[in-house]
Length: 269
Image 1 (cartoon, rainbow, N blue to C red):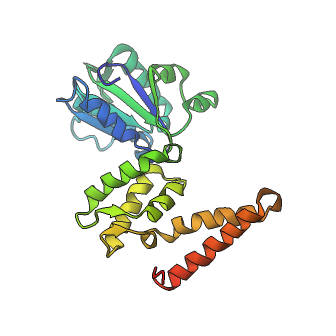
Image 2 (cartoon, one colour):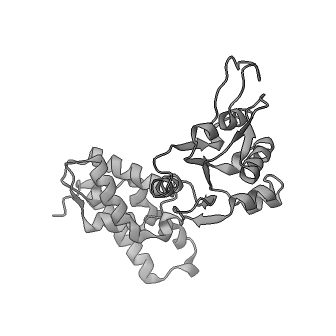
Image 3 (spheres, rainbow, N blue to C red):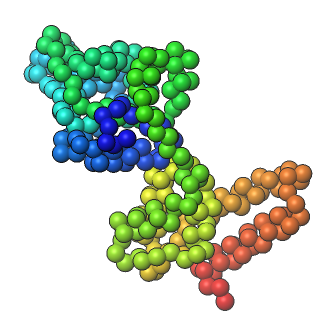
């Protein structure tokens, strides 16, 4: 995909690394020596995104005291990454459609037609097909963006990646911690990670900051992650038809041992 100039649409839950993949595509492309420009479409108020993307002329609106180039101009010959594209309003969607179809645009308040020679990579954590059916997203724009789809799975669907990611974050955040125990790794791999890789990164950074050990251990894992399995099992215990006697015993043993270790600061003896 990186070797082509095709428009790409990256989909996946928040925190799965869509921005990292977009930048990777750029660095592996023939455009790598040109700018990589990222725009968070959900992070700008309605009306501001249009000027941010396409620029504006002096006097185009109140406060426009001088000409300002937009992100498409800044990304000349490079890649422009439109993050959370589903948040773009109807006017911006219309202008983006023209850019993708005709490869040109005008600044807000301007008449000079500018050529767009950047590659467009977009990302979203919402289902754009549902947005199209609800009338909130243009169908023609969706198909212009959906030339090369890239679906990024949630971290809970690729738990085998957790050890590699953990090693990466350990090297990034610490030179004193050089590993993790099997017990702690098992607990981290068992957790569903609703915040995906971003949550894992924050968790590892917090563990590294708070630990006094060379290796992360079970006691370094946060209470939220420690209690997730017990909370999940406790919920199942409320439905006697969904849990076996063995599962109930295992849940009790786990709770008893966890609280004993907590009370004695992890001293097994």
